[in-house]
Amino acid sequence: MEPLPSRPVDLVLLLTPHFNIAATMAFLDPFRVANYLGGRQRFRWRLVSEAGGMVVASNGTRLETEALEALGDTRPEIVIVTSSWTPERFASRAVLTAIRRFARAGAYLGALDTGAMILAEAGLLTGRRATVHYEHIDAMAERFPDVEVVEDLFVHEGRTGSACGGVAAGEYALTLLRGLVGDALTNDCAKYLFVGEVRGPGTRQTDARREPLGNTAPPKVRRAIDIMERHLEEPVTIAEIAHAAGLSQRQLDRLFRRYVRVSPQVYYRDIRLDRARGLVTQTEMPIAEVALASGFASPVYFGRAYKARFGLAPSRDRIEGRVPFEFRAWPMQRAGGE
Image (cartoon, rainbow, N blue to C red; front, side):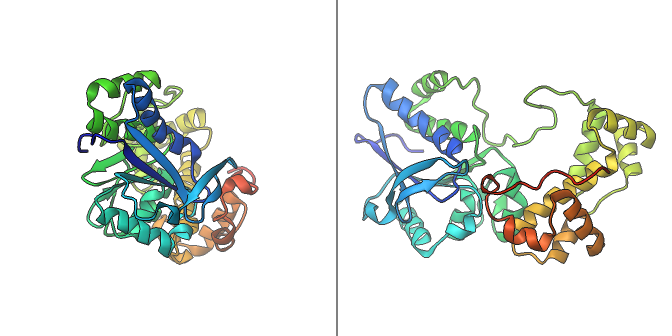
């Protein structure tokens, strides 16, 4: 980003209902710290929503916001759209018009969690790279084929950017901050916030080699899981997976039951069902197409397996699953064994 002007830089955080408050505050805090450690107000910000008033976050926390119209003709340098569940519900004409106006005025447009879907709806990401939380990546790729959807922690290119949420939002903010105030103050801000390392652009959201609490599964099991994850739409056989991982099928089964606690067949089926659930609840794809896109040739078997895993049929989940799970009974417990 361009260096700071002499006056404070104006940030606008545009919140939608069910936004992720952890990601939002993780993004905002480096700018607060930059003001504090820098000894002057380099940044100022406003929290806004379409209607203003209290906005309920995905964990039930409430934040007071200004109405979008209260911004009038102001020209903030940075505008961040922060949303989570069902972003399509909140991409109203007023919101999209405001976003396009900010872009025309030269603002940097960023997004947290699923906010990139709203930027894409506004037409700002055509031909560009963007990211969302990994749970929503398939849905975004389906809805916006003209956007290069990547599984990066964050993307920062030109006048647009996006972060997948969580602590990655703070690393995204520090990357923006570095372009505005330089290395020295940004490093001080990272230290103040106990950020040990800012992972750079291109870092993937999920890394099979790293687990937050340490790896326990052997490399060959992780290799098998990686093969499964790369073949969700067109499944391969367990025998082929075992061979590619350098194991016999019997060895693979024994290792999965020891370290993953289920058989390879069940694990493979369940991650395909997890993909299907994202497409069911976050897109308008016909259920039969969702089944095929998730590697299920039989719609009947797909429907039965889906209900066994999630507790309700795909057609019903398409309605009830769009309610943020914090506000409903979460039917993720499998009903029975393998």
